[in-house]
Length: 92
Image (cartoon, rainbow, N blue to C red):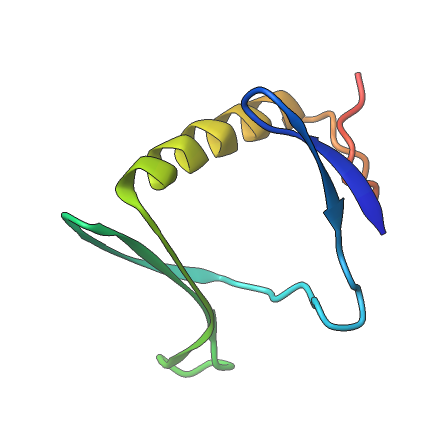
């Protein structure tokens, strides 16, 4: 599966191997920040217990985290009520 993603000033081809790159569900996010960077621990609650399991960890620089936050806020605002389920594309 390939999609075109627009970066800050260039387009990049995105290739995803769906057999080896699953979508992991998260219902909790733990964020650790220090002067050097940010680590996001994406977690799942284990049933009805008070325990969570980390399913993915992502680390990035503080500068990258700021850009990620801006992009994330923009795409969420743009997609409010306009996202087609399963398509991954924003429609008007």
